[in-house]
Image 1 (cartoon, rainbow, N blue to C red):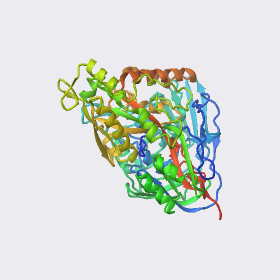
Image 2: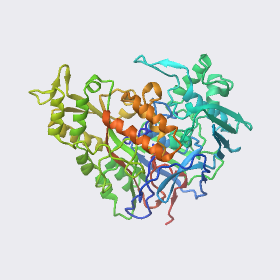
Image 3: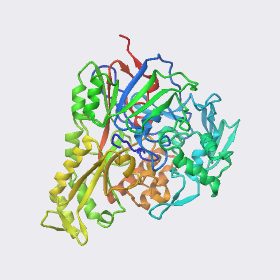
Image 4: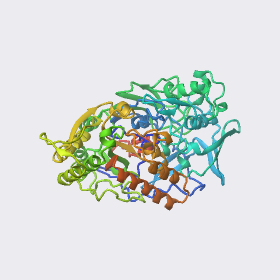
Length: 606
């Protein structure tokens, strides 16, 4: 998942995607997303080919987004930020992309990039990826097998390093999910054909190297140039020498931030400037071989305040906005013919993570349970979500969203915002209520910080949690910072964290968010350590029977419900608003959020 810095599956990592539907044209149009069938298709089935359409040049457009682009390599545990995905979705090449068909997310082959992708054998599983001859990076160098090999190497390298807390970790800091099942990656046809042979089946192979897995390709030839490595394809996952260390050093640091010399494009747009805070500028990639995108220039402007972003839209400073769904903004813009509002339940989900490296939570399950009980999930949804998305309810799963096939509510048995029920759990666990109305037990005091990125709705959520849990003898201290998602969250510098993961139609990618760190949990920021979750999820990733995978993923969720290291709050409303002159403007998180159809945007003639 990818971390959504508008809030929060940054799939690989943290984000993320959204099972929502396109909004229609006129004023107040809403997403018409219905039940989503998240089955990505028959294993080895022939996927549809998608090609970007020929459109008119509409000039410059500006979009207000909640957080700025921060890293070109967004595929490590230390980066993995959805805000960067919004800028990169039309920049970094992805063999598979997503499309909306009749309101449902469908995974397709990017026909501009790929000539074909075929499963040539199921026993063993073998996949042949053919990149188009004309596909090149923005410096004119070919997009080819080297780029695929680099991703595989980064994910599977056995070279290790020691973290600051003494743990052993991959020197590439990349998720191994799926890639570790590739026993052999071969290059042929002038490096334009890539053949991957798997040691065991991997059901969600459509997420490898691709957007549906919150992933993509990086220009391996740039790494070669900057490190002096002659041929990256000669470095094997088993290698552990100075050469692979040089590759890892550049992979994890050389693409951090933005540098025009190394941050190349293999898509219809390229980043021409980025201050890594307030503004990112995209322009058409002059080396792009496909149909040109509608906007000639796109300015992404950071605005964390939804009301202010709406004002920018009304003042025509921007043509579209993608804030966190805000009740007042939605009501303000709905019903006005000048604007199109898109709002639909997606796969991004708000939740609270408790840092299991903290003895307060690790050693006191009753505190975790009591906190889950006193958290007023229904009140949060009623006050902060339902005006934007009528009918929204508290989320009952960390693996499926309510509009997905497979969804089961495993949290409905928890008392909801019930202070007395929470107090009974605390007292049964040996806690004593002090004179300051806060429970204590031995060295522990039921007091902790709940940290989050500076977002109005998050601050409102914390206030509701504080008021409810204070009645239960649990002190929740508000702690917010503008860079929380970008810096403190991936560094696990929190006691409890309020954020969101951007999910995807493929569930394997979220494995890294919850798996044990030593077994692929590259984005396991709250240090959750469950062998049952890790093993069952890994089994699901190799299960080719769709219904059996659903059962296994629900077994995973039941285990997480029993442990209560994470508390689901609500399914995010995918929300955008735009000038009604522009279309099609909608939102799919795993594909880049509001920018996912940027290449197709058009403007009505007046």
